[in-house]
Structure formats: C-alpha cells, structure tokens
Image (tube, rainbow, N blue to C red; front, side):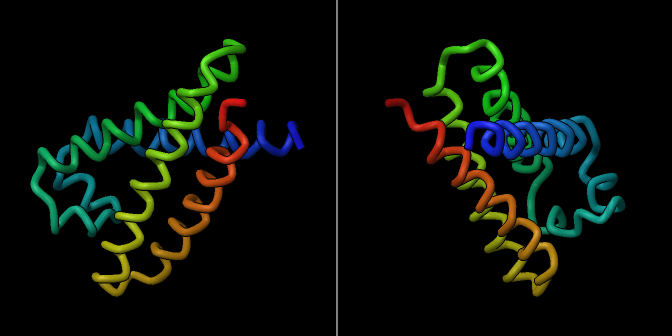
Length: 121
C-alpha cells in the first residue's frame, strides 16, 4: 500500500507543480490559447491565485514525504487539491466541458486517496 501511495502522491504532485507553474507564469490569453478555455470566466488575478494554490499544493504533497516528516502538510495539500478540483469540476460542468470534468474527477479521487493516507496518526 505504501508504494501505491508514493506513486499516486508523486504523480499528483508532479502534475500540479507543472500545471500550476504553467498557469502562474503564462498570461491569461496564453492559458486560453493552450486549451484552458475555462480561464475565459476568470480575471487574470484569480487565475494566478488558482495557479499559485496548485503549485504550492503540488510541492507540499511531495516534499514532506521526501523529508520524512510533516505529514500534516501532505494531508492539508492533498485536501486543498481536492477542493481545487471540486471547483474545477463545477466550472467544467457549467461550461459543458464534460471530458475535462471527468479528468478532474480522477485528480479529485487521487487527492482524496493521498489525503486519507496522509492523515497524521
């Protein structure tokens, strides 16, 4: 089970560091042009806040486990990713982008799995 948690945790962290970093360092127009049509509904500052939350949460999902302590951060970061994904799923369903909603549902399940297994004992 530990290996499964490591794999899911690593994938989740890597995905969110990459996507959060991309959104954070690109303009709103570039995010939209690269397929992030959801960004049409948000102000540039809101996109940066979402991107920063994704980037920080992605780092905090991985780093505490690598350092061997700070499981609280892993739990909190995974819970934050789950909340971000819940909002994302809502946005994509509202925009009738069902494929994106399904993909984000997978990330939501991964985040809940990591949060559950990262719960401090």
